[in-house]
Image (tube, rainbow, N blue to C red; front, side, top):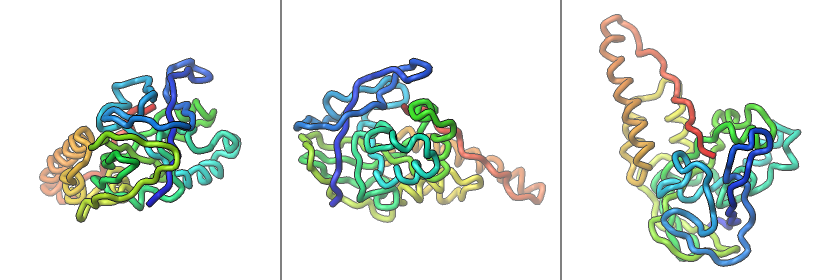
Length: 239
């Protein structure tokens, strides 16, 4: 069981560019409906890269804020739960505690962990710190997205409880390490892509990378070389 805080937010402009973002969240103080597209009253500025059934709810582990504050001390006063755009914050869970495909109960709703977040430049502008988004990726402290498999009501004070573990699935931290490895194991990528419950779009990107790696292997073998290292694709914008 992991206690959580709930957050929702409206679209607001960023401080310098004026670009819209849904990152500014406020604590929830009443019971809310949690549906397939997320919490009632929550807004996303760019539905191409945020929101939708497989990015319905974002959880960011509260313990990561201390690491961010050490790395970016000028932003420390702003680095508090809810400030990075999450809907759920917990000090009792991080990427090592949750497996891809795990189903957790919150209130009378059921959530399935389906992919990590890919942070973007809007985080840098939000906190006035160039490189914060890249640091989050490098340190594997991205948080993750849930799909809602059973809508329900949630309220302040609810806790996440594990309802169904995905057998032999990678933790989110292990999945991030595999995905971002400069020269990943094809077998590890294939196993990750086949995980029950993984987000369809992320599975497709993993399969594309596997196909590329396999296509390089014959040419490299003919020349007596190992396959060339492959850098992880740049994170997609995800406000």
